[in-house]
Length: 298
Length: 156
Image (cartoon, rainbow over all chains, first blue to last red; front, side, top):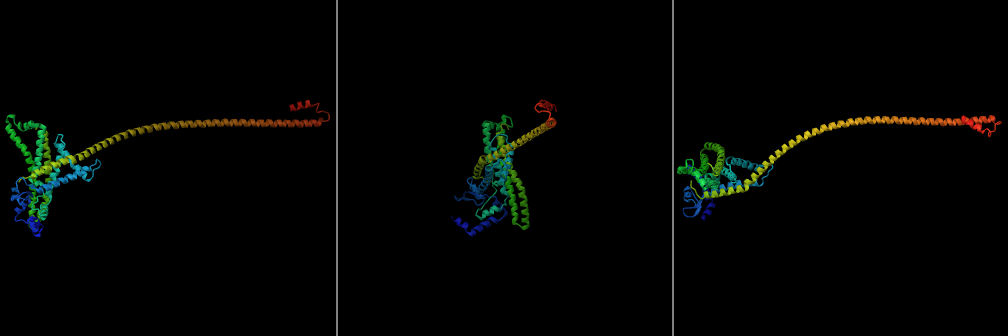
């Protein structure tokens, strides 16, 4: 392909930087920041990265957001690597540094699980830990100034880069649907198909009103993964949007830029709370949903 | 919001991460925490036990101290008694020895005196005989008067 040669040419690189740093309008700037790096089948039949939202949409289901996958897998591997290292070197003696930190988090999650989950299941605590730390790290990417990584990406020829995986609904829904699958699995396993159906159909109203019950409980059941994923996505999307809007100020006068810098700092400090809280809520609701799946009586 | 295969990729990644965490991360850390909890509990129990033992030992020590004091007083009293006895015995022995030596000395003196007296008597007798002999040389035959002379000698 001639694209490779073109990428290495200086003029093309400069064009890319100009494209990535200067926008026709603020609307375009925002749109650009909210566009994933999507790999899939292009309209002309070849496979490649989508340029723009319309092209990404046209790719249909069989396309993949490379940036979301890259950052989420990278962060998950980082978390597991750190914790595995601590777990390998763990001692019962006086814990030091990393072990102390890891133990602190482990105890915090263990306490949360013990508080909300009243059954014996070796899966739940590691699941809660993975959710909490992974979601927290994915949210943490939000604190990196919005233009840094996309700018670096543009320098090496990546047209779009969304660095916060939890702003991609695919990521939050992937998590929530996996949790939902576990909820369904344990509901069937613990209560049996009959028991699960009874729970959905024979309450809260008397048995003869079971269509109404089924509708109510069915909506409640479906609402679990949707609310779980949309809550995280919505919060992170809104947070990211505000960061992008603040970043728009840097294009104005220096007074506006200074004000923007202060705003960005303040919002980032506030956001530390939000990202931790969102990770904690996701974890706690997962534990609660699994507890409900285990309990015989509603 | 357009959904694509990222959804599936995320689910697979998530399942893998949970599996890894469940297998290699959570159990070792939890085990360490549990065993440390046990270690601390054991340590505290051991501390309590030690404290209790210390109390017992202190009680025991003070008891044996008291016993030792009583025993020491006994020993001292006995020793004093024994010392007095020894002194008394020594006094007695000394007195006896003195008496004995006195008696021996007296006997010795007497013997010496007797011996001196005897020798004096013999000498006097010899002198008397010699005097008598000188006087009687002419009239008295020593042989005929030997009986008489012996008698005289014995009387002296």
